[in-house]
Length: 351
Image 1 (tube, helix red, strand yellow):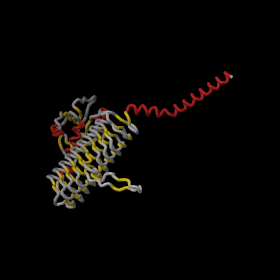
Image 2: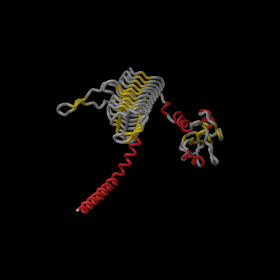
Image 3: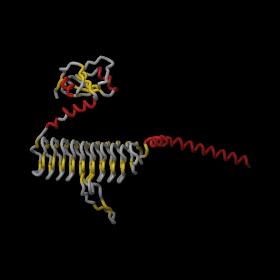
Image 4: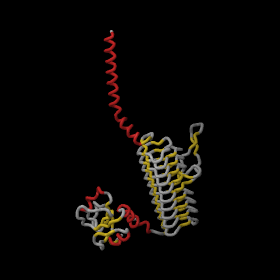
């Protein structure tokens, strides 16, 4: 990327303060910037750096008023963080410019490949796969038979997508993730062994979903495991068979949702949360880290914490009391001894 700050200001519909011919060729943190770097300031905690930064230009919010002289070019925009993110998306992803099929990729003759698709080396595209326009398939990706992938997707190295899965538009799936592996279904037999239950369904991932690295989304036993529009999964998340994750829900690392549970829309699930099978979690639920959900959450837009999880404020109060248990136990023993001494004294007096 090489662009003048005047061109950047026009692109972002921003107000320019400083030399319009200043050249930008890279991005950097405001505290680490140098010549030709573009940085941004949105958090007031970092304001100190705008007076010392060596970055050539800084994106700031339109309501920013410096309290000291500034030695860098300022571009004032409605939302500095959002504008910086836009620029990273536009100029930072070199893979978005790639097109074509690498000579080391294997693509079935029956696969349907859209316009401006890139398929990297050692990727394997099975029969009857459909890949939408401008989608980028990185090296060493496997896409199983009859799978559909929409437009503008990014499938990063080592992803495995099993047969008959459906991926929507504008999705990102990070390295090492597996979509459509068998659900954990085994029937116990009289001899205490287990017989595998065939997993005949698929996985449906709707538009604008991002899935982190080394996640696993299992195919349904029957029907579909569904990840709804706008969901964001962190690295190392397990989604079991027949689960449904509602629109715009976010799930942090090392969390797992067991089979057939339904998580609502706009939920926030922190790290290392476990949700047992066949439950319903209401829309807008916020579940604190390391919580265990073992019963239905019916109240929408509530916070939950603990194992088993219960209402957040009550959980915090309970943890305070839990920490006090040793001192309370000591106090109870002292009171018991005092009561015993009183009873002994009364008995002596009666005698």
